[in-house]
Image (cartoon, rainbow, N blue to C red; front, side, top):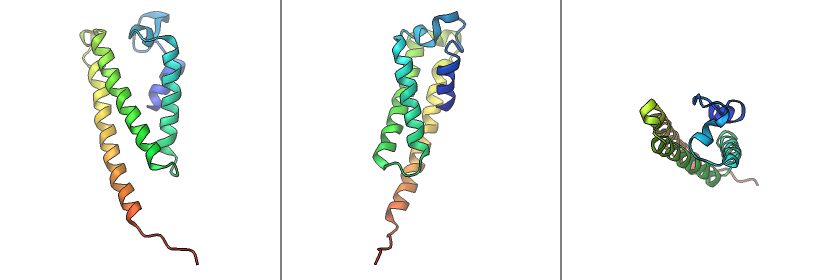
Length: 122
C-alpha cells in the first residue's frame, strides 16, 4: 500500500504508457478519486502501523484495503489490461492473499493480548 501511495502521488502514469492521461483516467475513474484513494490509503497504513489504535479501526482499515484490492483487479480486467499482461489482474489478488494472512495473524495476536488479565491498580 505504501508503494501505491507513492506511485499515486509522484508517478501517476506508471505502468501505463498513455502519457499524461494517468492510471485513474485509464481505468475510467474521475480525477478526484485518486486523491480520495490516496488519503484513505494513508489513513489505513497509519491505522495499521500505530500500535494503540482501537481494534475496530484496524478492522475497518483491513476491510478497506481488501475492497480496494478486489476493485483494482476488477477495474483492470474490465479495461482489458489482461490482454497486455495478466499480472495487472493477478497482482492485486496476490496482495489480497497477503492481506488475508496479515489479518489472520492480527486476529490471533489480538485475541492473545485480549485474553491476558491486566493487573489492577490499588
